[in-house]
Length: 287
Image (cartoon, rainbow, N blue to C red; front, side, top):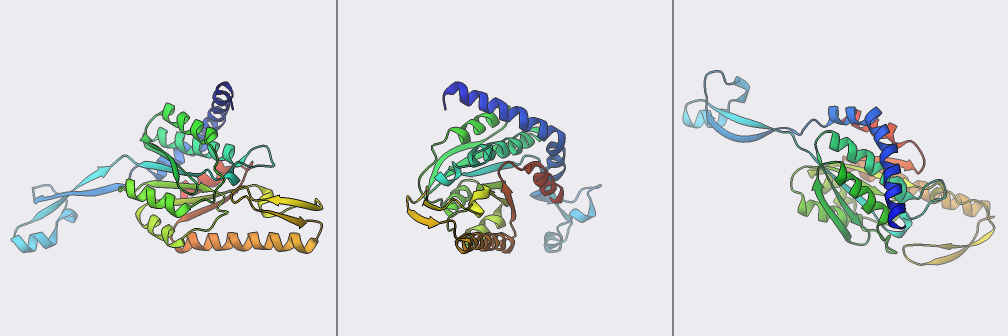
């Protein structure tokens, strides 16, 4: 894309997503994520008027005088967007490529966070982490994230979700809201999902095109794997071949859903072009 096309595309996404965000998502996001609650600050001697439930009974018993725990409210949240930029994400047979659809979802999430005065950061990954935008606040920052997702060089390599999660956890120690956007076409270590979901609030979003799940009858055709470069000839006229392919994709999805469930992480399966805002609204409502 040329610069003027990028600016136009970003503006279009901002207009579409801000309407959705303001109408449906921002209020629900604010209700769900007002802050991370109360965090321990210090212990001090009891003073008249302190709440009884704040008494530190262990220290009180040890020193034979009452002590209370002082708590502070954590108001700021950090949202991290982990976006897969392997070559299979630069694909689409509907009105949008997967990357364009991801940019819209990222915009809605980003504007929701900005409306709550939260910081938003971005990690682009494929076989390794390619770009990191540190968390910041504000509309301009969200627009920069959208532009980065749209203009990234999508890499002909298998995506390594484990490496992206490991990198994120190494940098961001404080609990964050983590949205992992990928088509999950490649293998990953499910143990890393469990580790990440213990430390952060993790939502995996599988972004897929309908042709990822079912291939139509187009006769003998050459199928090309954009990530590995492998090519195979397939007889798509064969009903058995199409059924076998579709069943394999269903099994892969079930395994993916099971991995997220066992990890106590959330998961969404979203087809490009569908209304993702309802799914996000329900997710925020549950939280």
